Image 1: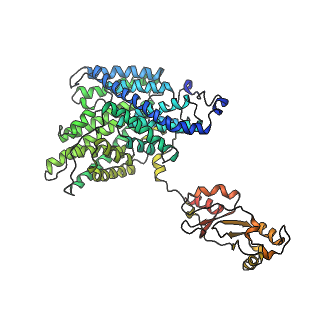
Image 2: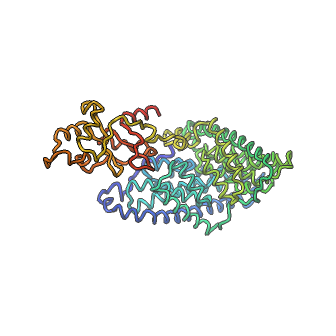
Image 3: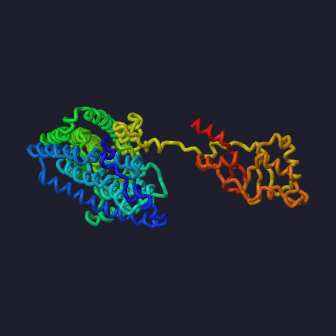
Length: 591
């Protein structure tokens, strides 16, 4: 399995795990002081590494394929195949954990290995992904950048001796930094890490993720500038009928996402079942296939393909050519990724989506010229459509389109098309692609899509009306006795609620009530008429709980309290209902 550390790499960080005395030196307050500072530092280092990574890819591309690769050039056949052989050997014998995109590997580090990513993996991911993409394999740099950032965070946090709990938190912080620098889009990176890596909004980590992502983008923009990745003219949706074309794009994108997922889901495990010797040849064979596609007329599918995306946005391809590019890019990416060549799927997904979107836009212009949408807007929406449908990150897909274009007037078409594509892909392919691949690798990481769709139970779901006596703390024992007599006396009352004037409550068990009524004079032996019921129960109170709180929040209290009163948020002391352990467990069984 390519996302587990190799046997010689599963080494607990010495500074924390293998030396308890060393770990004890790290005081909690020091960790808190270091946490935010390290987040910024991780962002800066990740940003620099990602810039170097992108520069290495571009340098290798020019060196190996030339400044303007075109059909008929023999190097398009030779270079990807030779690079595939080198990548296969290094992956097999030197860097065994660099296969794949990097996203599932980062999740595995978070949920299985306590945030541990070895420095060897970071180095191997940098070198082999740069070689693969630079030599023309149909893969992208964004996913490896995410893992590189997570590895940087893991390495730095271990070096400073952070606790085991903090080591796990640092992985998504570095992941956000790496992805933000690669995309030059901090919001999209933050959302993707939350949607796909950690699966939830966590106050403990959100601030640090934001700091690291912003820091890395500041570094990246110092080198690349602050201009958005793609520039298109403003979108003016003058004719509502044009939304139908975007809806069609959503349907087409959902179908292509299904084809993409099915192709990867079939080819990837099939290739892994082949003999070991053949697996050394698979990256070379994939390089030969991709190079062949380029040699015989479609060099645009090689590498990340950002230049071709820009050309599609500026109407430089006919709609049939755009559709052909989308189909062959899908084939090239499926072959490259399934062979185990390290690299990401973000850029190929955006490429296929942009070609699909531009083809729908070009078709509309040809047959429905009265509609006014620009071809660039369709390409841009198409990028978000396939991102939402194939990678199953609907929220990220919307903000990614807005950030990489800097065009917020496109938001309505984006939301419409992305939603349709996501719903179609989800209904036809229930298992998301990342979850499918982890299952193929024998791992069962949390399904972030399932977590997003879970309906969390709240206290109100197990709450029921009050059916026990409610006594006022200001009453005397005589007053309380008369009230209890309406329920048939103490022998019929297992529990009673005591209400205090400040809005708090006390759950009194029958034995507590019996002890008080058996000794009405109390410790000072004065007549009971001078003592209130509340004074006899001391200062302890039941916890203050509200109907909208998570249902599991009540579980720790049942060891002390058999019944918990639930109060109204607006009217302190106003009783909404009560919960018991039996009702809570029954509600979970029904969920």
